[in-house]
Length: 351
Image 1 (tube, rainbow, N blue to C red):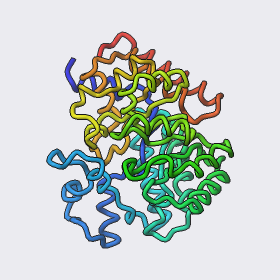
Image 2: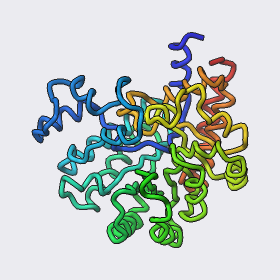
Image 3: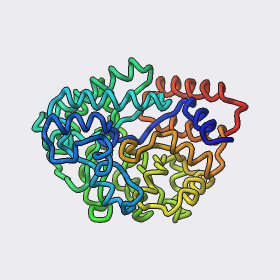
Image 4: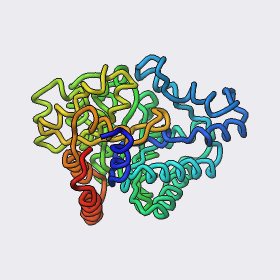
């Protein structure tokens, strides 16, 4: 099958996105406009000039450290700015065929430069995201992301407490991201013990993203993770794969991201198929599509074109995502029906 024909089929499939960062989903055109408005010291001649700095380019080092330089905290200076970028991110996700989006964002990142209030920034994300999702006829919830490099127990607990007051605004989980090498999981045990004890929010931890299997295991045992962001180093440890399979701990895997950050050398050698065959619940996600210059369909295309995944294989992964979504059981059942129905319409097509 030709690549464009395969992509047309993939775009039409209903998909679940468990791992997408708002901060990595900002449109270049919007960033160009905001950059000019706030007179940022950036190459603001065109989207192309910004792309050289803010997106991944083939001639750059494929390292996580390099990739993290793409993120800036000075784009949004008002609640309206936050509402705009959130609404656009949700609409872009819908255009990719995503029918359930778990959009993660860092309240600290949104308020660090702007001076905006935490609760106002969080409400701006949630209210605009919910409104856009309703218009696009997709479901949405939000995950609060915390950066390892900026650990502050008091500030983090304040943010979680604000989130707990916004449960009706679809805040559903807590995420730990950032530099695993210099900030291992043990530093955050006190905070995640508190989140776990409260019991209202799902816990997902970036772990095993080019580090070690032990990071994945400690994220489960010490930080109470029920989902792992990336987690591809799990493939190096057979006992750990068995543990994740038995415990139904789901990996939120982002293939193209893993390549661009240097966690793997080649996409056709990605460990997702091995993890899948070993019984680990795996899912496919996009991570930071605007920075990667991709959509989630490009990640699905990796599975189809490089790993030989069929529609039945992809449906199995979608079922994993349904089971792992931070949703009430009634909504989970509705989502599964929507996914199954959408795939039924595509049955008989090869990819």
